Amino acid sequence: MPLDRGDYVLGIASGKAEAERQKGAVRTETVHAAYVALIEEAARATGLESLRTLWQFVSTVDPGSLALPEGFDASRFIAIYVDGTIPALDKAVSRWWIKRQQSRLEAATGTCAVCGTACSPVETVPVPIRGLTRIGGQATMALISANSDAFERHGMVRATGASICLVCGNSTHQILNQLIGDPNHALVLGNAVYVWWPTEAVDDRLLAAVLWGDGNEDVAATLRGISSGTLAPDVDSGRFYAVSIGANSARVVIRSWTDITLPEAIHNIGRWFHRISVVTRDGSPSRRFGVYTLLASVAPPGSGSPLSRLNPSLPEAVMAAAVTGARLPPSLLAHVLGRLRAELGQFRSSTAALLKACITPPDHINTEDYMTGLDPASTDSAYRCGRLLALLDDAARLATSSNNSLVSRSYSAASTMPAITLTRLLRLHQAHLEKLRRDRPGAANRIHADVLDILGGVDTLPRTLSVTEQARFALGLYHQQADSRAKARQAKQAHLLGKVDEHAEAPAQIHPDTEENDQ
Image 1 (cartoon, one colour):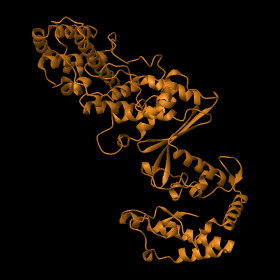
Image 2 (tube, helix red, strand yellow; image 1 turned 90 degrees about the vertical axis):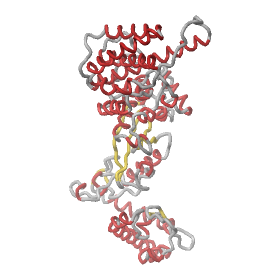
Image 3 (cartoon, rainbow, N blue to C red; image 1 turned 45 degrees about the horizontal axis):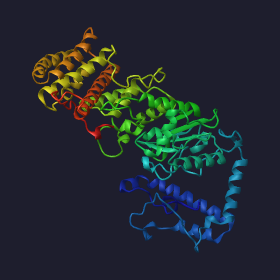
Image 4 (tube, rainbow, N blue to C red; image 1 turned 135 degrees about the horizontal axis):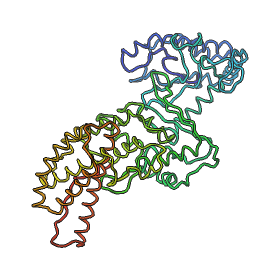
């Protein structure tokens, strides 16, 4: 009661647009009347003249006569002073409020679902949830509310359907507000806030490391602790809790709930970084990408945060996979493949890492090495088809000295119908190979040998590929390109150091590579 919103105190509908204010006019009239009645009750019970003055003001106030500042927002909190003080802060008001609440508790009509004591379930939890404006919520929101007949259970209105006592309602809401306001325990994931807390002491940057990965120097020590296994809780029985919170109108939406042991959470996070382990575009060792970078790499073009442009369920699913060791949903794999086709098969390292995580079983015996880099011994037809497209692209680039990539022109068709597409490209490849044999015989021999090796391990090129096979095709393409870049870089370094025959052909850059794409 010391502070309240402008619609309660002054009867001014909140909202920036006129249509929005008109829509909330009826509600504003109701809440303002309830506020006036509460102030009158307090004035009569305490006999304070300052409260009577406040009641006279709020009961007769004409918003149109007030000299309000330009851009006044009725959804913001305001305080009214009487003779330099806020009436509601008087100790007499505090005593009256406590007595009023105790009388409600004494008329117990149920049992609190949290503490188990007899109580009269509160109709409204006095402490609202704050801090969700960054995901589209309002300044204050209700976690428990049923203010429409459609949401009531057996006639129990508003918060009474949850059967929670005043003490538990206030304390849980206050603690949640503290967590939401703590950057170490509340992370924004697109249109949701991921809030976590442990029951035992552990590095506060644990979840920040998952979100930002090695792109954030502040969590480097935490990442090293996760990788080395030195990050461990003080007590093995400690638990890890997390909740994903969204905002819907004036209500808080609980999207997901996590409850596992703390050692399990740390173990799962360590395995998660193994699941996303994949060589970079130039064949260098894997980076530890954060969830933000992984998802941003497959977000559709647009303005605002990349994660806000994704289905809200996807960021939650990836975070849950990192913390609980769950499988990633098929919808994420379909989305990643769709983005790859839209981007004509142009890979980022982070996209490849997310793709690998989608098809790597969480309980795989060796997640760190599984599909991390080029596997020449793999007999998987889809994987070999992806490698084949990369090699045909190598030959085309070197023969024509052009950046007009076969991958850009053929990726979508080759990744879904490899038999038709690759057969056509193999016929074109013969012309490229003949030109290479005249101009660059060394490159021609290397590519020809690799193509024959790939074709020798495939009985017949598959006519179509399933979604999972398309993922292996994409990784085969990515691994082969990364290997080619690594070999080209090594050959160039050797040439510059004079470690090759001075009459030998200088190596060429097979795949143009830019730093900004290696994410």
